[in-house]
Image 1 (cartoon, rainbow, N blue to C red):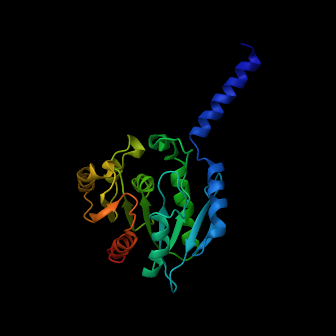
Image 2: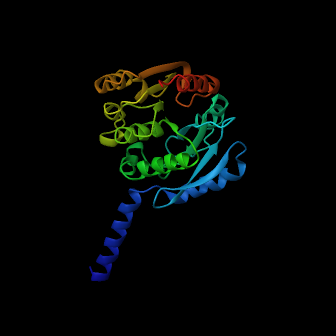
Image 3: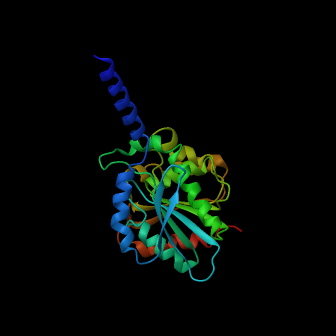
Amino acid sequence: MSAVVRLTLVIFLLSSTLLAHASDLAKERRWADQIVDSIISGDAIWLNDGSSKFLSIYTTAEGNSDRAVIIMHGIGAHPDWQQVVHPLRVGLTDYGWNTLSIQMPILANDAKATDYAPLFPKEVPARINAAIKYLHENGVTHIVLVGHSMGSIMGAYYLSKHSENLEGFVGIGMSGHLGSGAMDASHSLKSIHIPVLDLYGSDDLKSVLNTTKQRKAAAKTAGNKYYSQKMIKGANHFFDGRDDELITAVSNWLNNLPK
């Protein structure tokens, strides 16, 4: 093998490794191209995580609310996903909460859930931090994270290391154990001390239903007296046909956070 061929192979392998540890920005742009012009409620906002721009949608509540939720979608989706994400980002504004739905790191369609693990240490915190900064710059002083599915695991991971400036966390359809380390939400819950709503459906994924006790035990280990679980009867992982119940459950919890 010639030196040129060896060098080319090394460059290719390094590039492949870097791509495997980064969000698929081309896919993010395709999502953005599809949804930005169709947004009816809210405004498209481009945030910067320090290495790239990413799409978010900011929807304001009636009046001058200083409260907001950061909404994080599930695997491979976008910030206006019709299941869970869109209903919450629009519906919660009726209850006095601004919403900032953000594009989380995503991978190709054929990626497995565990393939997301390398994205957690750098890209997840960078995007959430950019969202928090934007809200602070726009007069928001009370911020809660709301994540669905993979977004809930990302939120739990973030909060296990950075809970300052945040007043609560809603994990919707949160699997307790998708993998080791960053993707082990039950492990993350052991380090979270702010109020947590662990919300799921009675017809949710097995990985969610089979770890309810594990997640509750983790919160108990943390000594988190503000952790609670709520099951919505008849709801599946995407709360199909249960949007009103989803919004009601989340808004009631948000508006009863300890002062």
